[in-house]
Picture 1 (spheres, rainbow, N blue to C red):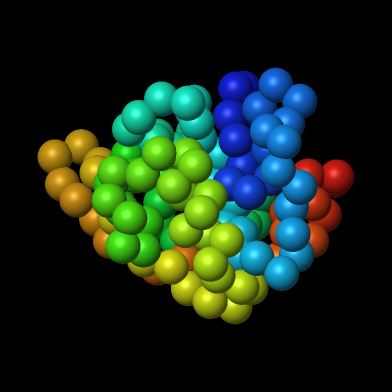
Picture 2 (picture 1 turned 90 degrees about the vertical axis):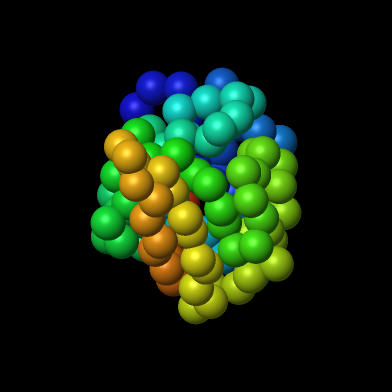
Length: 117
């Protein structure tokens, strides 16, 4: 999977210090390097909401909810405001265009289950 971060569930060098809380929403994006802006999608947790929206590896996160050009910490803070079942608007840059998506969030239990398989 390479160096990356599953939003709200870290696999980056052994973890990021945040414990997933099932009360918050998750969407299963893996970032190329969460420490570097702009945030670029490396991949997805299998069968996660983000994997089924049309987002693609290489997409650059321009906006999540109302947060433009988010840092990793800002992105995590935005997602902590939501619960499973909520949906979040995402704007990405791909090639020479900007695209909008909506992702329905799931519980961290989904992410943990996917990671253990």
